[in-house]
Image (cartoon, rainbow, N blue to C red; front, side, top):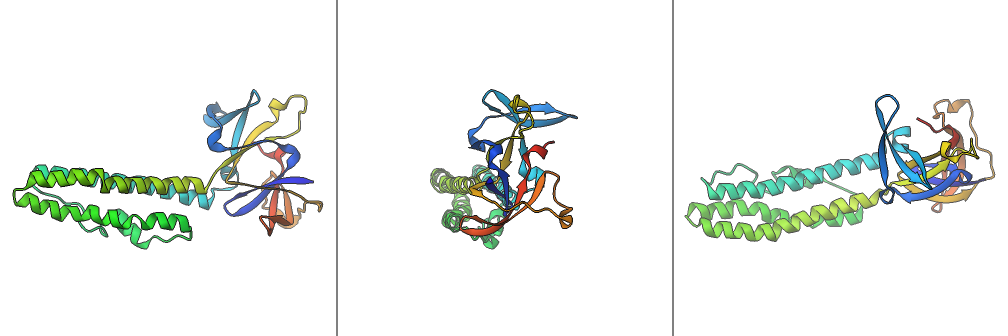
Length: 266
């Protein structure tokens, strides 16, 4: 039998290929939120004129550590970018008024700086992006002492002019880097929607079609060995048939959990 594999949280799963009707990046399909069940809402997609409920494998099996970490990093990057935009605004207000400025003047003391010093990643491309933050981030924070010193000497107009220059250059560079980092994170995990058919009602596919959102799509492979399920697998979800052993995926031998589309439901 042929299977389509996909991954979630570093583990491998598969569905019989005969159930697969369509595969698309989740960003390329339009979802519609509808009321469903007891005050719940569900995403649906349109497939060949049929409205299909979308189930998220992360919800069915437990949240993916990879996606969870990406979401947390995306939120952090949004917050730290806003911090530095606010920092520049606060410095401008201080220069226009009494020169009182309480935010971090040392780049290591702001929330991003403290996080940045300890951050490590095995992703070489993301690491290269993050390393480019160092120079503009340091330069932003150096402005505080430089410009407040000019302000104290009565050279406020010059200080404000320098600030506006760095707002258009150094801060802009920092904002662009935050954008590059976010774009990379969004590209690392590319959720995919697989439209499946349960095959219970071949004459009325609208009753059987649904979408399954997964972390990463994998390969199509053949497996002649029977799927095994024994008493030690009592903990398996009800929509799993058992294990496919020693499957070759991406040139590696792995074990994949075979899912039974006919038993996937809310």
